[in-house]
Amino acid sequence: MGVPRALYTDFPLGLSLGKPDDKEFQTQVMLSAFELLKETKGPVIRDFPVSISATDSEPLNCALPARLNPDLHPAVDEAQALKAAYQRALEKSKKTSVGMRISAVDIPDALAKFAQIAEGEHWETLGFSAESIYGTVHDIRSYYEELACELAEVPIEPWATEQWFYEQTEAGDVVLKARRAMRDKHVAQEVWFGLAPAGRE
Amino acid sequence: MSIFGKDDKAIAKFSETLPIPEFPQCDFNAAKPLNASKVAIVTTAALHQDGAGFALGDSDHHYETLSSSAKNLKLGHHSVNFDRGGFAADMNVVFPIDRLQEMASAGIIGAVAKNHYSFAGNQSATVSEIRLDSGPDCAKRMLDEQVDVVLLTGT
Image (cartoon, rainbow over all chains, first blue to last red; front, side, top):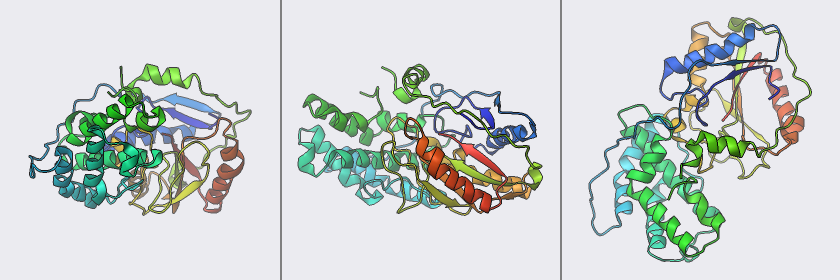
């Protein structure tokens, strides 16, 4: 890599300090890195003694709201009911990654469009471009993953929010259904493939 | 089929297809005592604030300046195969600014730098732009700001 001092941490991508909300663990990682400053010859690389697996996580359990409005698609109803949880998460963390394409208030309407795609509507007639549909799914997933951190009563483990979103929420379900519908209609792969991680069906 | 981002073997296989640039030299300097050093964070998580950001693809080699007090950061690593849950729960997992502040208060480090810097992790195959342009520019800024130690957090 060409850096003078490196601490090799066997952690999943995206978790440079290892464990979110674990002050003690993060501090240990940083102190181990700073220990390398005592080295007088280099470059030097040292292993951090603890590994974290991307596949050993316990499934995340977040209570999802009961149906409020049966006239709405379940994903739309769900996203509307979760607005308060998203707002609490935002107020607590002061940050959100929602906004690549749409804002949080647009999430229910966006999910309504994905429900239409799942039912056979053509994605372009709903106003999507290849770029905007990708960014919209990014924002939907970010909305859910951020509010999951507010609802969860346990630490967030690697990939736990992704798994929760696609496997337990109505929103994740409708995104996957829309993706399959686009694939089955022979929409260009570069449009539908990126709507979920590779390997998700 | 496994989920790509969670599959170490699949990632390793993919990584083997990526070019690895050779770096002919590595500058190495003796460090000042940590408790007398000003520390800055440089992250490749593409962190940015509202109104800024990074382009998709591997041609955006610019960097963003993040103040020590910035809390409203967005994660610019948009890949669907990337786990964003950790950052959503705790920014410190890629940008450990709270940990640095605690270490400064405890006298473990000398000071926290006023500014920190963020690049996109997806760069060109040769990384020549970041090596010859934005990287040195960012380094000069940190030298001007009397930064002694840089903590690089790769994503």
